[in-house]
Length: 143
Image (cartoon, rainbow, N blue to C red):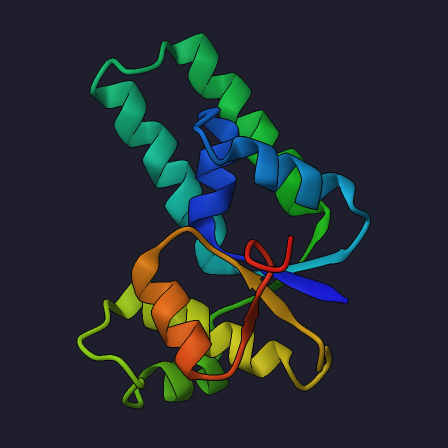
């Protein structure tokens, strides 16, 4: 089985939020992890934003970036290709949807060709609702 790691779970784990244990168990499961290159951008931007707002220190920020890079190095990462752009530009079952969420869902859809049992791990309701409507199983609901 493969799991599409959307940005919200990675941030949950990095910032030790309530749902971090779900992510930790997933990361330790040994399942194949896949994601979009967008996940790295969103994660680093969230860390930079937290640093700029003095929610974390520079030292904590460096540690968070290291943690993110460590997890992402274990993922198969798909760049935002022309195929992803085309898929993300189509209507989704539950509109409106933000462009970044559309990119995640489009990337997951493309990963289905290689991983027909792909499940999505997300805590973002827009992604979750559209993923369900597209027929994806959610990893966090399967536990």
